Amino acid sequence: MRTQVGIIGAGPSGLLLARLLHLQGIESVIVERQSMEHVLGRIRAGVLEEGMANLLREAQVGERMDQEGLPHEGIHLAFSGRMERIDLAAHTGGKAVMIYGQTELTKDLVDAHLAAGGVIHYESPAVFVEDYESDQPRIIYEQNGQRQELICDFVAGCDGYHGVARQSVPADKIRLFEKTYPFGWLGILSDVPPVEEEIIYANHERGFALCSLRSHTRSRYYVQCELDDDVANWTDDAFWDELRRRLPDEVSERVTTGPRLEMSIAPLRSFVVEPLRFGNMFLAGDAGHIVPPTGAKGLNLAASDIFYLSRALIAYYSEKRTDLLDRYSAAALRRVWKAVRFSWWFTEMMHRFEDDPITYRLQIAELDYLTGSEAGRTVMAENYVGLPFETFE
Ligand code: FAS
Ligand code: PHB
Image (cartoon, rainbow, N blue to C red; front, side, top):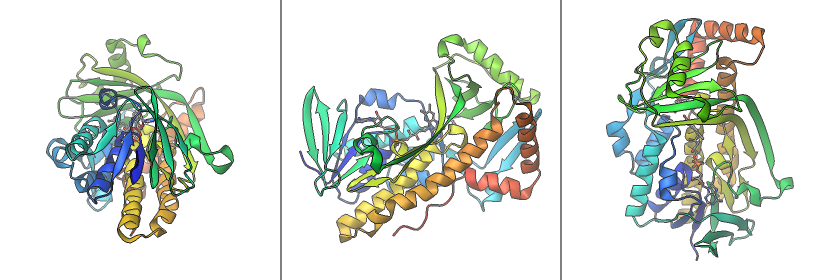
């Protein structure tokens, strides 16, 4: 089989790229390891920066988000028994974030792409990318137990942290930067009204907690947990009790509890690949970088990668330009590293580090300074709403 752009992975990165290319008449084929049900069953991100929201509108899949999504102009930082609101809009000239689940936007992208005749091969894992340095790179994948070959002009590795695109590159041609954290996040999804209209990030001596939401009737909460913890160790009541212990009293007493729809543990890591281009193969999204979810940046970095990569491929097919393809990796990584830094800084400031009492005092001092300073609030706000995409045309 042959196509213009072969895409590995039908997560947000791969689907958004396929959609943006399709609207410009550029053909693509997506191969996805999992079933559609498995991909659509993932409970992940919930906070969209304006850049992502605008790309979804450009991809003509923003309608349900604009109807059902919740624009948020502030977040709360809870520490030392108190709550401080960061007015995102006031400190960024009116910017906000959109609360709309990754599950939902993935559904919107799949529905639109398939309705437009897009080709997505589910349960068809890529096993290797061959000849990515040539002008006819090939994705070797399996379908119904048979080896298949997809010949392309370009390959987009949108296959996440565990994907094969990156693993098709020899170790001496690629640099990996990784930092792991000694804790994870235990998350619950429950059909209960959120405790607060806006997101709360809580630093507590018992550990970090996060109060988020998917709608006015569906909440998403997290508590920091040990890396070797297990969901089986937690009853719903145990989760709610621990969450409430980590929140200021005036918040804790307002928490509405209920049964889990889902409970899972996510590890925290920072991970960056350099470069993001190898001949005619490009890495985008989690295939190229992972950030701890503290800053809500992971999905939003996939958006900026796809912003740059879609424009580069469109410029190639419409004007035979290769300059944007040449600029992709550096442009994407400049924004990635700034988001990795912010996510690292926010994670270090909000989480409990074992037996290190001075760190807790330093964290409280930083939070007290940051929320007491216009400059500090601006730093938090402009990073949280998302740094701008650079001009790329
Ligand atoms: P994805 O991992 O979503 O998609 C990659 C796809 O490639 C998958 O469908 C996979 O099955 C497929 N694939 C892998 N190997 C393959 C192969 N060999 N062949 C074919 N297909 C293959 N980000 C935020 O911004 N905010 C958050 O709040 C947030 N919370 C998160 C919570 C959790 C538990 C996790 C795990 C992540 C969270 N993230 C969050 C980050 C997350 O949303 C990612 O950034 C986002 O899914 C990135 O999208 P993709 O790059 O498409 O990667
Ligand atoms: C979520 O709603 O899942 C969420 C919100 C903010 C974060 C991380 C996750 O920083």
